[in-house]
Every structure is written in C-alpha cells, then in structure tokens.
Length: 172
Image (cartoon, rainbow, N blue to C red; front, side, top):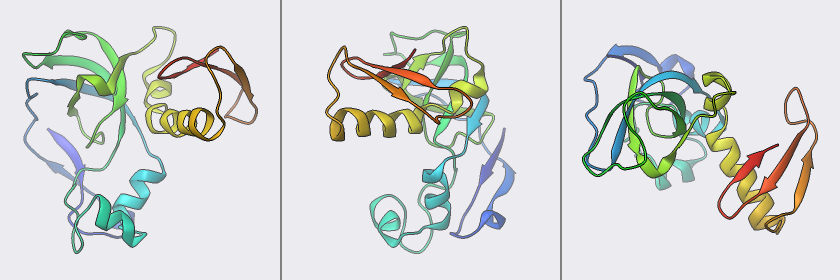
C-alpha cells in the first residue's frame, strides 16, 4: 500500500510517498480503508520535531520514532480484531489514529466512532484532533456542564451549536 512517510525532522520536503506493508489489526484494533485524512497543527509539530518538548514526549530525540504522519482519518472498516465489538466490515467510521496519510490504517476501536450518514468523509476526517481540543477547552477550562449550550462563532463556514454530553461534543 502507499503511504506518506518521513525518516528525519524538517519541512514538508522530508515527506515521501512510499510503498509499505499493509497493516494488520491487533485484537482490539480496526483496519480502515482511508477515504479522507486531515492535516492539523499536531502533524506539523511532529514532522518538524519542534518544539523540542515534542521530541522528548512523543518522538525520538534525533530522528522520529513515529514515521507515518496523520492523526485524523475517516474511511470504511475493512477488518476487525478478534475482540472488537463496536464495528464490523463495511461500517463508515472516523477517529484518531497514527499514520492516517496512507491507504490503510489500524487504530484501537475506542478511538473511533460511526460516521454520521449526513457528513462527508472529508468533513468527518477534520473532526478528531480539533474536537478533542475543543472538548478539553469547553469542558476542562470552560467548565461547561451537561445540558449547557455554547455558540461557536467563526468555526469555519457556519456557526455551530455545541452540546455537551458526558464524554463528547455533539454538533447541532
């Protein structure tokens, strides 16, 4: 399968399209045929290895340990591990993973959600890291409580209402 990879820190020039082995899901993982992936600040920091704290926390000091960029993906489940109960082949999903800039990616089932039918793969792939960041800001810093509503103005092409549930933000 084809994937974007990098073996050293730097500008986007370090990225290469290579043929690598297709991943196989572990017992708690889902194999996704990627239909869309999004780029965000986390990918940029990991690729550059800056700030240095990023290297110390996630990557290698002199060269990256994680060599496949991309954290957000949406696609179709192709296979599931033996202990996966929430998804089956053919399900349309989105979520956080490692190595989303590839034809296929594996990730733990608890890092995925079913893609709503009325959302494109591209829109769904733009959600995971941004939504987690928004959730942390609203819930942890803003102290929003279950049942409260927040109007997010300037969040793309339209205003969104955000509803707070126990573990997630739901677009309204």
